[in-house]
Image 1 (cartoon, rainbow, N blue to C red):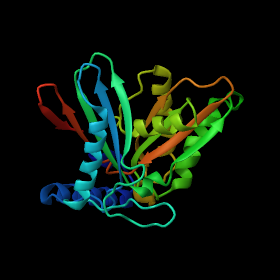
Image 2 (image 1 turned 180 degrees about the vertical axis):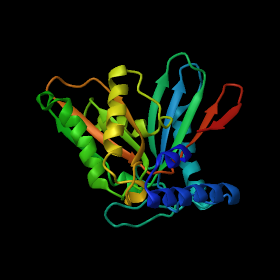
Image 3 (image 1 turned 30 degrees about the vertical axis):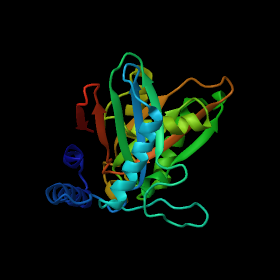
Image 4 (image 1 turned 90 degrees about the horizontal axis):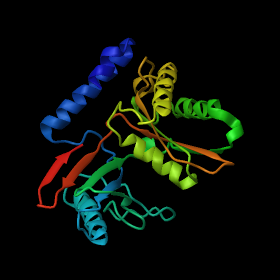
Length: 262
């Protein structure tokens, strides 16, 4: 955010950056929430094949942890029944928390990354099924158009996560995984790494700026994750992350040591 502030040229945008950075400093100093919307609890769990663990117990513990974080600490419960809109005030319920599991060959670590995802950015998600004949230009245009239509809603400048390939459900998961990467990192494939830079330049040329009030910095990074897909389709999904890009990680080792980070 500090580097983005230094790149910004719009006077209004620079003032917004100043307010954002003051917000971060105050939240850190006073142990306060950086934003009132603490979102829905999403966990990306990577289980090492050499780490002996009961995944069902881990899932139960994460659910209880999300509940306790809401009941005992200042997390706002944003979970609600989709039809009755009844809020249990626990951040958990049918289908929540959201758990994504991956298994890492040869690792002896349990890696848990928690992403509290707010509605302002999540509501700007988009997915579309393209065909191979549509070409790469159509995919890029879809990303840029989605960001343009989102405007100020996802609290820019944040991170644009893009999933390409797979199926309708997998591509959305890939886009979510993309926003969890270290900000500004590149995809391991040179083709997609170049595409990330191209989209970053295109999106920042839109002039949306911080909080949608104009400026040179509309997004901090574009991250792409991809998968092989069917010969007759080419799905793409966009998942936007707001500027706080909150996350918390716990790495648990066989000897019981826990390493905290982001």
